Image (cartoon, rainbow, N blue to C red; front, side, top):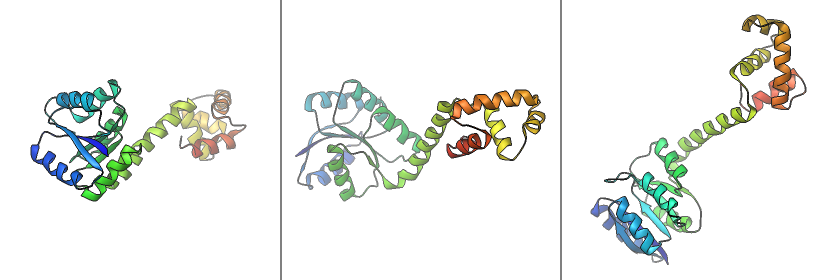
Length: 211
């Protein structure tokens, strides 16, 4: 049996979830809580396999509660179950240590499947949130690539001009630098990108999404 702790400040929601999960046959609702403080107490006492946690509750939010649970070294799965599909909430929840983020509109059969999967260590996300999350984390990955390459704004400007076919002299004029200064800057860019020449540097910058 998969033990589950239900946390929501609306008793009618808890009762509805309990009926759905009890019908699954292999899921046991071992406890309920109506706020984050009570949820922490129940989690310590019951050590459930999965916690279904509302996002907005009196006092601490579901995201704050997730951070607190992980700080207490709770190792079970935590799934945020909420009506709010803002990708910022999804990102914050996953960064806080949640294993899933589901909307309350999720069909009962999918919710049960998500709980079973989460109990096995798999992350869960409502399908309608997937595109937004991939876009969000894709942007983070792009920012990280830029930081990892350590390219400054001037470096990227030089590469963009080079990609347009500008010569070193033309780039220098456009950026109010000498041709020699641009040549030296290219040498630094080559090192940062692991490139051997201008064409290679431009190609590598485009491949990494830096320009």
